[in-house]
Length: 225
Ligand code: DX5
Ligand code: ZN
Image (cartoon, rainbow, N blue to C red; front, side, top):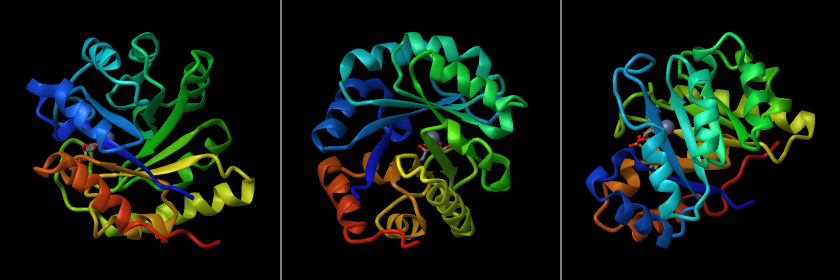
C-alpha cells in the first residue's frame, strides 16, 4: 500500500503561498493539509475560508482542512463552499460529532476526526463507520516543528486494528506533528497510511528532496495484523 504524504502549509511562507503550494505539488505530495486555528481551541491563529478559497484556485491537489476551532459547526458550510475535499474536526471540540460528520458528508465532502495526544482512543471508535480519515495528533496541536510524541503510537495501532476488524480498509489514519524521516516509519509500522508533514517539508531548502526522503523512509514498511 502506498503511503500518502500531505504537506502542511503551516510551515510555508504565507507571503508566497502560491509558490510554496506549487513546490509541494511538483514534489509529488498527495494532498495539502491546511491548519485552521481560532486562538481558542489552540493558542495560535492561522487562516480561514477566504484564504482557503484562494488556495483552491491555485492547485488541483486535494485539500484537507484541519479544524482546530472551538465551534466547528460554524465552519462546515463555508469550508464546503470554498472547495475542501476532506474536512477534519476534533473530537474534543464537539458534543455531537456524528451530527457534524453527517452534515459534512451531506455537503459532498469526506469527514475526518482528529484526537489530541491526551484523548483516549475509545472516544472515536464508534465513529469509524462514518468517516474517511482519523487524524491522530502526535503533538499537542497549535504549532509546527514540535517533537513527535512516541506515546501516541499505540493509539494508531488500536485504530488500525479496529478498522481492520470492521473491514474498513479504505479509512486513512494520518499522523500530524513531528513527522520526519525518523518518525514516519514508526507511524507507518504502527498503522498510519498518511503522513502530514510541515517543517520536514517546508523547513527544507529542497522541498522535492524532502518529500522524496520522506517517501523513501517508509518504503517497505507496513502494519502487520
Ligand atoms: C499542528 C498542526 C500540524 C503542523 C505540523 O498543530 O496541526 O499540521 O503543521 O507541523 P510539523 O510537521 O512541523 O510538526
Ligand atoms: Zn494539522
